[in-house]
Image (tube, rainbow, N blue to C red; front, side, top):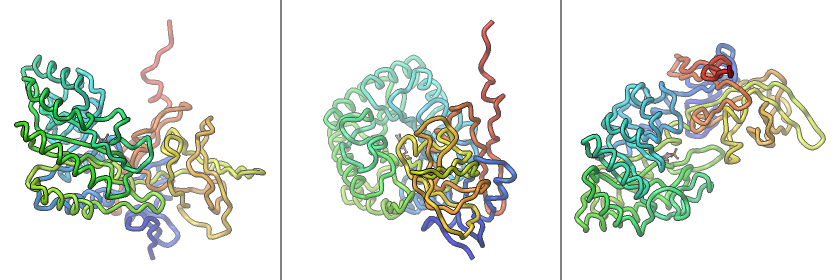
Length: 425
Ligand SMILES: *Cc1c(COP(=O)(O)O)cnc(C)c1O
């Protein structure tokens, strides 16, 4: 008997009374490796990727995993082997791609603040494209490329000014945020770029936000980007690819984002209708490839019932799983082995000395000290945002494939944390 706890997500389920990732019992992993522990399902990641690949079948398309969502080497390796490219936002991410066996010529480099040395390294490695976010960055990239006797392939990130209808911190396609070039300045910026000898214009890109659960913002943004493509090409600058960014949401708490293949069949229909169906398409999904493939296991340390609130103190904290503290994000919390008794309402919090250190509020759970629980949907923007705050070592990570499990990151020790520090004198 198996019971899915996330609808449509068959890889994390109860078999009997025990929560499993694929065929592996999570309480066994917690015992073996300790907690907090991140556990990921390879099958869940590959099936999320397959949904995009199905959507693009027969098309000239490249999926570039936005690796800031989860940049652990074994996960990059899994995606590289499945044919993925990568969307990077720093020189460090480029080195991770190369260390994991990814191909530089399937890498696109996004971000508003690339440094000269990051540009040099990426050019030398031979990445596919720089997604440039400002006029000033164009000038610097041109200088860097000329000094190396190279031409840098560029795409300009345009800001289509659509409201992705998501949390303000993860909405990026509106006029008043730091990303991209304003719609009105796009043509002039392309003309400037195409006049620079160190640059080769190859594409256009946009990325309107994250955790987007509706189709409308994507369809609107597509129309606006295609209007710009028309204007740019009318000015004699041809574009090889259209990069549509990432941002597709996942089900955290009853959210109902469109499926990747269904969304792309509508977007491709629009491209076809407007005569751009043969153009190379690039996309940069992050969260939707990994978010629901991961869980974070944690142990109940103390139960602290109180007059106004009951607190359940666990051994994971905001340094391991920063999304609730940062965005008031919701992660489902479920027991690894349900007791089947009467629930009480708990605020699930970590040991860090901050009131913001909470993982879930007002959760009805039947718990005892020493129980193990899982925070679901923890594959994206959790481990990659983890810190050492309170001198807590970062968690270990395990990748599951069928009945096999692999430790892909050891738990960080105190010695690891202190390695690069020194006393004075
Ligand atoms: C973060 C980011 C992505 C990925 O966003 P998701 O919401 O995780 O899909 C893609 N492109 C750019 C430029 C980004 O900054």
